[in-house]
Length: 249
Image (cartoon, rainbow, N blue to C red; front, side, top):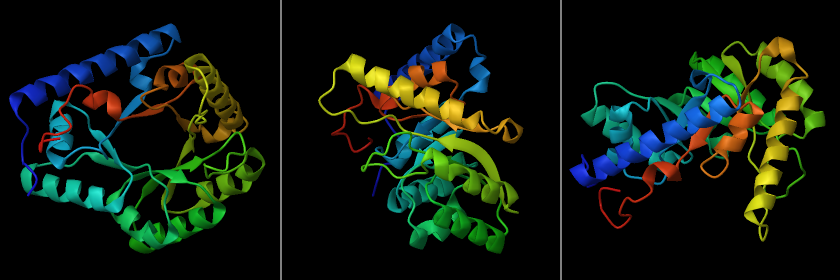
């Protein structure tokens, strides 16, 4: 059985990491002449025990993210047993149509709608379940085999479907920086900046939709904020210094 709480040392390290992340977000926002409050921090808890996710929530992280159903279910059960309230759950992993219903039942926000067929499927199930769900359409600026998503010229029909769906709220666009294996840190940073700026420019083609931008993870969220990201998905930076061998983590 997983532990229901974490020890004080782990809790202090988690709180210190959280403070550093918020300071970095504030600094990046100030540099970009943006209000830090305009940037949503989504804490990705996929790699840690339910008790750690619950501690993050207790520290004030009200938006938590998972990418797989088994881990998601373990967190939901833990919160139901040990917490009076639930965070807002985000689903950020690749979503298969045969698992869409389970994700829709659990997650108010889905960041990874990557095809028109999946979008139509999600819209139908959300309406059937009478559940309001926010969705991001995943885009890929470069044609990378390792990533799924809408190419820029495929996006307009999907935006129309999402905007018209009765139980979906079109939250915006989501992207991930290219992997760039073998590249230097400077080259990876430049590739991330290019992807984020291109995604922002793509979303700007439909100003009437006021599309948000889910861009940036632990290694590149400052570049994403500079490019206009409204939601950053941060995982490993929260857990630096935590003993991965501990049953609490």
